[in-house]
Image (cartoon, rainbow, N blue to C red; front, top):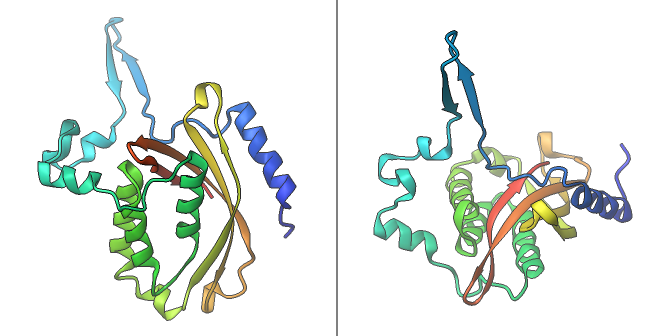
Amino acid sequence: MLRPTLPAAGAAIVALTLAGCGLANPYATTSTTTATATNKSTATATATTADLDPAPERGGTLPATARVKQETLAVSAAQPTPVAALAHYAQLDTNWTAKTVSATQTELASISLGSARAQALQAAASYRHDTTLLKSQVANSGTVVAITGGRGVAAGQWVVVTREATTGRSDYQGLPAQLHVTYAQLTKTATGWVVSSWSPQT
């Protein structure tokens, strides 16, 4: 299978940015309207993530202790520019072994906010008990190929392209290196930029 070269990957990212394709907010919800036979209409909205939250977290509220924990950042979390923050996060996210992946995700949680932090914490807990990765001696290595920001209606959203190779035994043996696309968002803090949304697409 042919693998895209770096220039091809860069061109693809530029095309994504200019066309606005794939840069829509992956967490957006939609609403639908249904009409009765007597022309009376009622609005029905699709389920949001708030509907699935535990009772103490509904309506955007969190207990004070949980909120402080969610908002506490590591000293090295913030970076001087958006690109630096995304590159740092991607470098950590793409380089791990079966023995270190849980710790890596915990580190990612300590340098991120919002859904990126929640996702990393969940992954850290999940990988802590994943014996399959250990038995197969899985490892992942990656480099950043391109980082670009959206324009117009996609302003504030970013596309990160990495080239990654996964190695290991059994099903993980001999896998070719591949390009991966991630949509991301950042938050500006008092000390710099921090990743707040990290949504792998491939």
